[in-house]
Length: 230
Image (cartoon, rainbow, N blue to C red; front, side, top):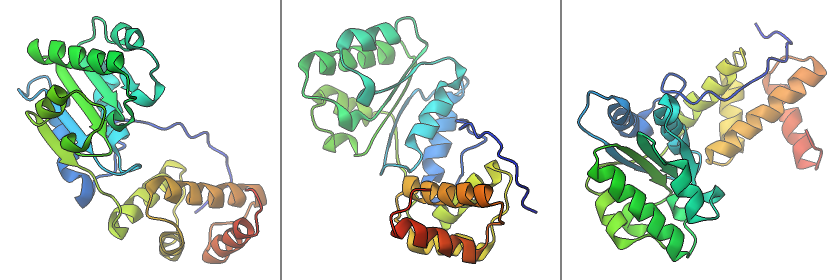
């Protein structure tokens, strides 16, 4: 039964909150190995489209106190070196966002080499396989292939359905199957767009104090199509 309480939702990046499916099974299995101090594997590279779960897994690995950094947020080599000074692990996301900056490129390679030589945990991710990363040091792209490498792809309907139901569960709502099917059929295959589509429906449901049903989902889509902000 849907109850009208606006519970605050805080994203929880953990292995327990990750939604496993066929398209990310290998990545999840490898990430769990990297996070296990008893496992000898200490190098992981994940790649796949935006919204497929790469960041979720990296942040799950970093839960134990390892800093998490996205190259989208870095502006200087010193910032990167300071962040990982004394860290037991190196977790870096969005390698495809590496700017054409020799200083930053050298800093990433220097850190990788330092952590790999000392046997510390390294987990990295990007949109593309190692060989397709531009502006990266050639030594780094080849070294990434030395460890565990996995692609994530959650674009199939079964995976997207599982993710959508997990988002609904996080809001303590059970969504009818016909609503799930409708959202899947009318939303792009990008997971971020799928979640935002559900969030709009959720917000409208709460504001109007109406249960989430197929007619309500259609009404929200009509409002969005007409340019109304929800």
